[in-house]
Length: 83
Image (cartoon, rainbow, N blue to C red; front, side):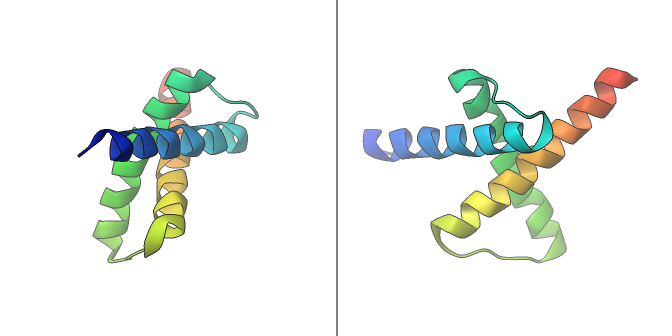
């Protein structure tokens, strides 16, 4: 992975984390928090989509998959915080 790919990866992670933060809590988590939520959400979304046999194509499909994964991640975290 070259430096440009890494920058794009982190930017998409930040975007996805920000979108998930808006959907779940109504605000973002700061640039670093958004990146972490977005990247972990992308991994979780990829795993869940793989289990379900769903494939996505292109950058837009990857963003949608990552947002869904990040929203699920934030939902799980909110449940664990309440317990």
